[in-house]
Length: 436
Image (tube, rainbow, N blue to C red; front, side):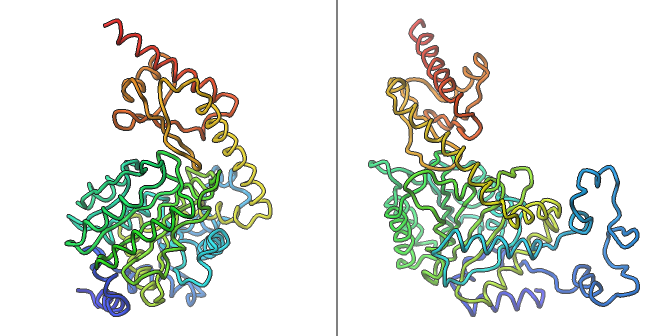
């Protein structure tokens, strides 16, 4: 075994043996090379004052070589902020800016110890890093029955983990913390669980309130008291889009420093928060009371990045950093937030009107991009295809009864027509069935 990885593993095991036992086989084996092209190039960058012939980019007149056809569209940016490789861990200024933003938006992080966010190629990449570091074949990955399908690809298909679902909602229409606790405690024999907490939830658009949040934390603590080591992942893809009386910060802050058997990991990004879906800029952040442990996890994360994508795209990191530094940033983001809130409120107003009650009910929602209908009389896939073929309307069918509708991409004045047409689609199918 490489001497560096031996030292990293020894550090993690001495600082927190519970976290060491959470690592997958790959997580224990991975490291970021301290010797090699990157380290030698970094040394040359500071010392090679005459000629620097180390790294694989081309220079011209002291600046990164580039095509005028591309630079003409990016003339507001210095070529050095666009064309060279970004560090594997991301632009330092961007990492600091995102950490500062996290602290402002999550007051519960005050006084807690957590890592500098590492830049990922958006949310899926962050989740895949978590899977690589912590998921082995047969490990339990726990998340609700209403979920984003990519979890299965990241954790089960890629890493062989066992998916454990629990009912998202209890009979009272609130987050089912009791079911979460039951799913966690069921892993006592394994001694390990990976728990994914996604709020606002995709596909339902639900975020727990403060009381539900405390129940979620208590459910994880109950697992630790049973001797279970828990990798607690907060998937905060739709963070900040909170429209009602729910939690307005990530549970990451409440979990940080809570218990040595809980390793909180925050996966988030500019993707939805700043409305830059195609930029593919995300972040992964660890919490621990040990700075040495955080440093070791950062090195292993950088090793995963180096071994897969090498580093994230530099231009989009620069664009996001420029936005975060802009004095107009918060005002512009608030403007878009209010548009999204108007669409969510209008959706709920229509659904509560009573005119569609014979066709569906809906799952509670208060945040994010989506909501989910629960169809009473027709199948979700049957309705999805009918709406697409007969009315040119796209929706997402989930299971037998659930139809996801993204109000995020529909102008508020068109929402009534959208739901009227979905309702007409239900009536069409009901009529066809009665004529058979």
